[in-house]
Image 1 (cartoon, one colour):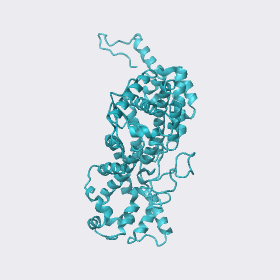
Image 2 (cartoon, helix red, strand yellow):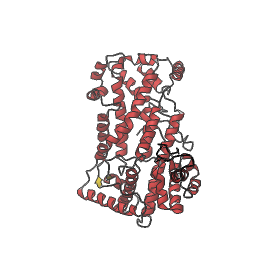
Image 3 (cartoon, one colour):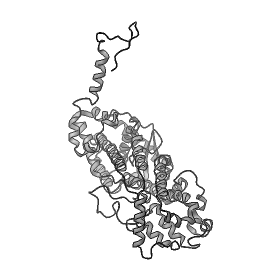
Length: 480
């Protein structure tokens, strides 16, 4: 799966990962890239490369669709009008790319439901947040794709729409004239290209996710706890642990996520808003692009020749059309990274509390989960694809430290109370010094001064010369 957000490559934000092979901004190819650097917005290089085939550049778009195998196969999808991402193509592409799987058996469905029920019973003893599951389900990989599409649509459409608007407004006149023969179908092709990339990403995820919350967001129907039996089995391969232990460990994580998202009503929206805040910040400096375009063309052998699709492809791969990341986007990404780390850290903490003394293989299973994150698990891959965010394992470790220390020093009630308002949660700066944050908790209610002041004013008697609301002359009470 490409780790470029809709074909864009941005520098790796994590100084610990810069320079690693395969990191963000590194070399490689993929749906969003044309070669080293992968700098090809929307994969347009492939589009223009195809124009050099039968029909050639400058041909009629309708002839192009009929003559070229690539477009002939997609011609039926070109009537899509449901938004910036062709979700029909995304669904079909994801399902067709999935490795052969099996529909869960009735025994598998029962095992999943029982594991989720037992997980809820264990979690009842370590957190005051009540269960968020009213039914336990077992999904195949195909069902995971189909059942999570509504959540993906709501998350991705605003981002893709903003990318299209930014690139359209910033395309230099010369490049726009070069693309003139295809102007009539560029909008629909954008939807096709987005759909193809999203479909590939969903297929990759469906091969790996074991629950409906593995990516850090609740993707399934409200109240549904979900296990994907085929991927549960794959998670346990090589661990030498019984299958029911592996299933229960993952059920504990699913049930913990569901509790959090069900009873912290603002959490889902905060995560979604952080992604959309990034999208709102996408813009392209047209003057900078025009300067880069001139430099790129002057440095290319033979310059730009409208009749030579390869020259256009080289231009798209040069990186001059990449949007620069703004301070506002950096802030949104930092907030998203922190929120996801806090969610995962809380889940790690309460699952450990519930399972450490009951599940013999908990340590081995938890370590497997940590290694999975460090090497790029579903959550890390998803957000790298969507917004170019490289989740840092260090943030997850710091968040886990906060929740574990809160439990030890202040108890589970104080720990979970931090979820009562977003302003109570640790910030990114707090995660830099997690034990300092924990030491400040429990000594006083953060809202105590406000509430004490209001209570004091409500019990004061009116000062001399002031009238209460009930006085006969119609006077009003003093303002707080």
